[in-house]
Length: 230
Image (cartoon, rainbow, N blue to C red; front, side):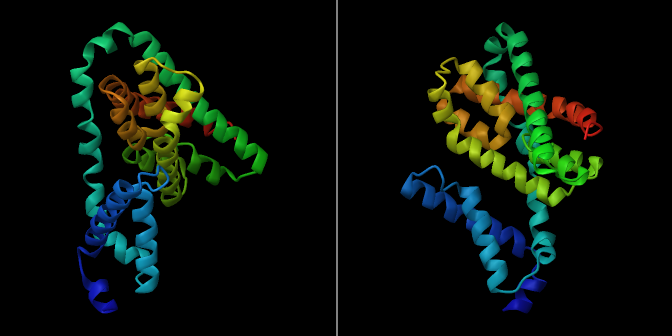
C-alpha cells in the first residue's frame, strides 16, 4: 500500500480533495465555526501521511497541481467586485485608507510580537505576509528569505481565525457598515475571510475581494520596508 501511494502521481491531489469534502460535510453537519473544512482537511492529511509513512515531498509532488489554481481563483474574486462597482466609486478614499491601515497593522503586530518573543530575522520575515493570500505570500516570503512552508501555515491559520470570528468581531465593535466590514475582513484574513464576508452580504464580499488584491500589493511594499527594521 505504501509503495502504491509513493508511486501515485495524483495521490496528493486525491487526498486533498477527499479530505476537504469530508471537512465540508462535517461543517454542514455540526455548524460550528471551529470545524473549518480547510482546518479539518489539514488535520486528516497529517494523520494519513503518518499512518501510511508517506513523506511530505511525496505528497507535495502531487498536491502541487492544486496550487496552480490559486492565482485564477484569486482573480475570479473580481466578479463580485464588478457587480458592486458603485459603492467602490463612492467610497474609494475610505476603502484605500482602510486597506492601508490593515496592512500597516499586520506588519506592526508582527514586529511587536517578534521583539517580545525575540524571534530571529528569518522567523520575523516568515510571518510578515500572514494576512495576504497564499499566492502572493509564498513569493514574498521566499523573496525576503523566510521559511515558505511556515508562511503558508500561518496564512492558513490567519484565514481560519478570520473566517471563524469575523462576524462576531463586527458585532462586538458595532461595525454595521457593509463596506467597512468587507474591507476589514479582506485586509485581515484574505480569501478565507472573504468567503465569510460573502455569506454576510454582496457588498461585504465585493469589498473584501478588492481588499485581498490591494492589501496584497500594499503588504509587499510594507513588508519590504519592515524587513529592514528588525
